[in-house]
Image 1 (cartoon, helix red, strand yellow):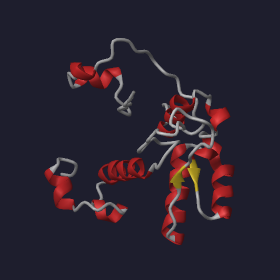
Image 2 (tube, one colour):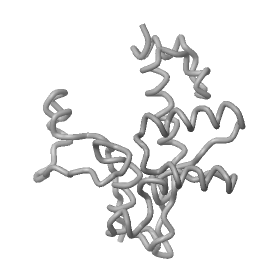
Image 3 (cartoon, helix red, strand yellow):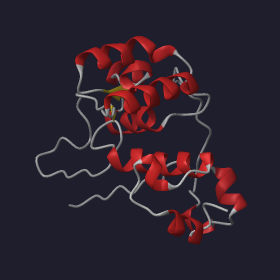
Image 4 (spheres, helix red, strand yellow):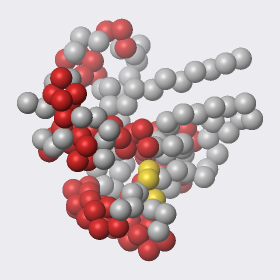
Length: 170
């Protein structure tokens, strides 16, 4: 038997209503309150790791300081220590470290058992469980658009002309 899970991040009921997306409306749904230490809304890696493992964030470890991992042990420790700071402060510190060191954090991955641990299971782009780079690229693009900067300045391989063509830049 094959089971395919296709998840749409940040597709809340308000967006479904606003864009008249009845085709993706669920038969049932409800609100989720955030349990993130750094966000006022549910934080993608934290929530997706919870869905995949069935565990609370404190149990699977993708929360607060566990949402980012660095290849450098000193930076990884600093990220853990700053885990309870607000997202804006953490983002500013992360940008500073990236610009000074040329290294990049990655989205943390739980080592707890998940629904993807079966021998024949395949998982792609499930933040908190598998490679979070595609999510980071999406966040980089959203930040570049919000900052009014060309995508290339944010490490994104999409020229400014294409961003304009897509309606992301004026």
